[in-house]
Image (cartoon, rainbow, N blue to C red):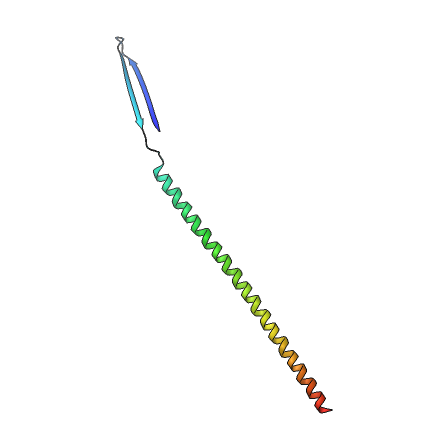
Length: 94
């Protein structure tokens, strides 16, 4: 960004003096850009961490449900076997 300032002054004798100042600044906000980029990188890292933790929790929940269903199936099989054994014992007793 370029800033240009022209100042004209006239003294009591009528002489005019002109001052011409040109200031060429850089793009500005150098430190602000770095701070913004740092905050952006941290926010992305935190978001990625939260997403991976959420996915891990869902996987653990699914595994727990699968294990519980497997245990229930095993227990049902054992009840069925016990009922069959009891039926066989009754038949042999008669």
